[in-house]
Length: 385
Ligand SMILES: Cc1ncc(COP(=O)(O)O)c(C=O)c1O
Image (cartoon, rainbow, N blue to C red):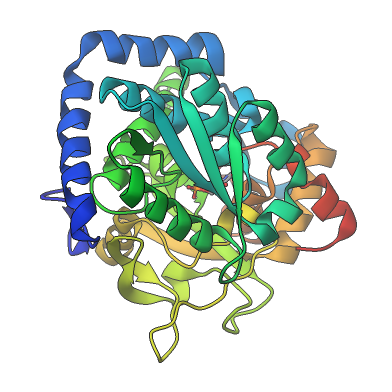
């Protein structure tokens, strides 16, 4: 990353009012990374509160069934049930470092909203979470969890009533309240320096996993992670990007390649500007953002982080997809074979592995199990997205 860009992707395409706030954030982030006391506090909270380090589990039954060696990085074991907590604790501390008293966030699956409300409760910050009304219906339990944690949940009725509309509402709130409010963005998206801030706090996943493989005396042949905005994938890829290891990002293939029926931003999109950054996105011939579909609310986003666009064009990472049905199959397969119920998002990475197991025969495959699937039971049992 140089000057806010990953190759030609990234940047800061926002209204003038936000430029000083982004510059302040950039300066604070640089100072934060050098501040020993804050960094120590971050590591201490991650270990004593969130449950790090997470183990790497060898999935022996699954491996036998599919003829490969499957290892899982267990982010599902973290407090609140997903990798999102790494970032919310980090940015919560960063907000305190900047002297802000309030955080706002957007959420799709609800995981980031819950993780933000949790960090805010822990750190004594006021918290408002924006959520599209469609997502709020799909993830009602998470709405209740956020309220219980002391957050105000604002339901957004505009547009497709999903994540992109929640982001627009959060950005508008930030413009109005930038003086005392930090926008705690949930993935490696948005204007510079957000993608770098989130990547920094999530890179703990890859650092840990790399150390765990070093201790076992070998490196994985392939690392696979699901890609919504792209934070769990960047988090794990950063640990292996300098190795020979093959890196695969898996997007939501939804029902088909027809517009509106998938979320294959890198696979089928084109570069453009959304939510303050230049990156791949899904839009039609009139320049309107296309509706997206995925069985998992966390992958249901028409954009992607700029670093992924760069990694795609540089060829370092291969971006593939997994359809709803294949993700559902993998969700059930991991539960049945290993006693681990994965988040539907993570099940996309597993679904890709299942489908491509003949080509991966005998290989050491590391999947980032970004979250646990308790939140998805009603969708899986109801068979609806
Ligand atoms: C468990 C889980 N995995 C993955 C994602 C996708 O986000 P990202 O691509 O930023 O990791 C989400 C988003 O809510 C999630 O809850």
